[in-house]
Image (cartoon, rainbow, N blue to C red; front, top):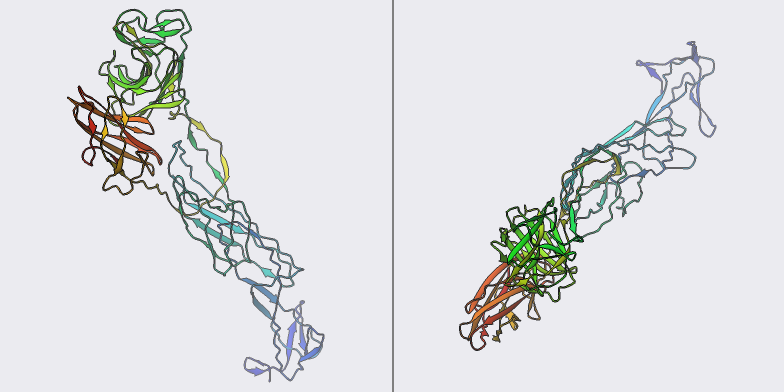
Length: 587
């Protein structure tokens, strides 16, 4: 088969050497890999050869790839140049330089070659967040873009391989986080069929050969689950945020260890200027004039969450008390004691004006020598004796404004009888609410992991419950437990244990009660509702029937009970049964 050029058979081959000299080619030989000489062209007979398949080998070490990145390996192109042959003397042939472009498929890694692992670098910008101090809240993470640059590896193989610079841009979705949720590690879906690894926090994932595309799905996580999430090791520099600082509040105290007489310049008298007084390093009514005497500390609290405390030195036969949330006009709340009973009163003016007993008198046992504490948090007022809760009132009708900032004490004299004495009074903020103040936080460098989960928080369910009186029962002149109950129709979730309703979940509910008696001469009946043994509602006392309701926050396991008493001129009345006569329910 002849060699043609421009449609004509070639009669000679020529080549031009590096010095530019034209030379004739008499014959063309090719020596293969085994050293065998092959005649390619003898000057007259055309011949063709097949170029051997070019191969190359690479060693690609397994790189350390951080979770959340997607790396696409480019196609590698190799250029191979065949050196210009040196023929012997004779005729000349014009032979073009042979070149080849070879696509290198995924190489088989063998020993003897070296490749430097590419360097991963990233830059992340986080917008400056506003950081607050709320106990619970929602944080919206800003969009993030991760730029990763893979530098070209240095390959030592017989062929020349030019790898392009790889650039990867990854967009991370903006997650929304809610309180109480944990973040699940996503399931890795690998396009090349690789098994999804189990990744724990702080682990390093060995990625397979380049060319794997991984997709992170957005998991749905419910509150209460704990799942190990992979650590995304991205260095992020956050601007210095402005952080609200917590003001510790104020605390005041007086031990009255001074000469007998008026309380002093730290106190403001609200009824005259003489009573109560320091007597024997304690506070007593002093004098012989009947009246209700209040004194307030001259400095106020900073917040509405307050406490007041004192030591009860004597029980007394008239009202003594500690005050909080008082306004300058005499509106506030006071925890009082007489003998062995406690009560929470509210007033609308000084000298006890507009006083209302919001809880009724609660038996507390011996009080002399005990420490009394009174707190106001939100609309809940609670009294403690030596650290144990003894009385509570929920101001569901906003009787006492939360704007009052004064605290103090009150004593009484009436009909030749004095109230009990007190000592070691204290008053202040409960340190629950921060006040404005700002500090500059240092620049933070942290490890950031951003997935795109959907988080839901479930509130445990609760059941409305009710019970109706079953059978009659005597109603004496002092409070007794109302016993003998049956589940109320329409309340399938009712749980009755030992004559009490037992709540099965947290909820804010309204509790309803009713008592009906018969018999007796001119009877007057009253009932009260207790939660966990503490009175939360007391009805009026009159007639043969009473009903009422109260709003209360229940926790799982809380118990609600009813007690009743009646007065009559003759014979003992009887508590009546039935769903319309005597009942207790909440919803």
